[in-house]
Length: 262
Image 1 (tube, helix red, strand yellow):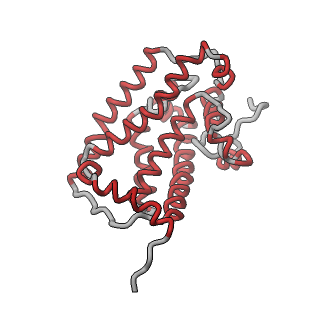
Image 2: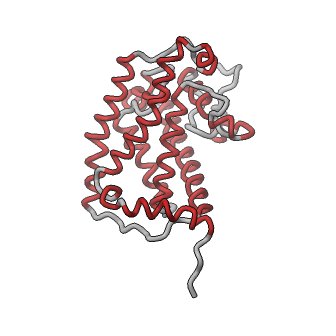
């Protein structure tokens, strides 16, 4: 007896069929690097434009968390250059090694929509917990901070293109968490793409320095998602707000920033 695809699966199937028809690109060793850089730069560019306009637009200044601080052209180019360099020198060789081991065949069917949404949510929660532990460790151990994490704090206050201004070790760590999580959950390749896209957006928004009425943290009730305000305070209040997205770990372990924190 043949099982009928669910409505959620039927909704995603045309998208998945289109991606499968581009298999020569999506299964090439170049695709992960092209996808990562293109998505990242596309998300950063609107914020770069806002930074250029902000000094002359009062409405934008009201939405900028630190309105008197704007990145210089040299800082922007330096951050972009570091991102391109690390993807070329570190990410692409690893992608090439993975591709040489033989790409996994793509499934014919798309995931059901509830499955995709559930796996994306779980991947975000796992990544948030893993990075929280990594982040606390690299702030509490001076050698780890000086050697690996200090690079990321060179730009304070932060801005969108500084999101991936990282040491190679931090870049590998974040990439490892991403890869392990989707493998543990056996995520569908379409789910992996959605998760990576969302993760890149949230990280860029976290570092953008803009608190808009539609910012992600305003869409999640009860303050459980910290977003850009949460992370901007980490860059200005060094020993608080270690989780990248949600606030529950900082609440539980007493590292959530509050107005009277020392």
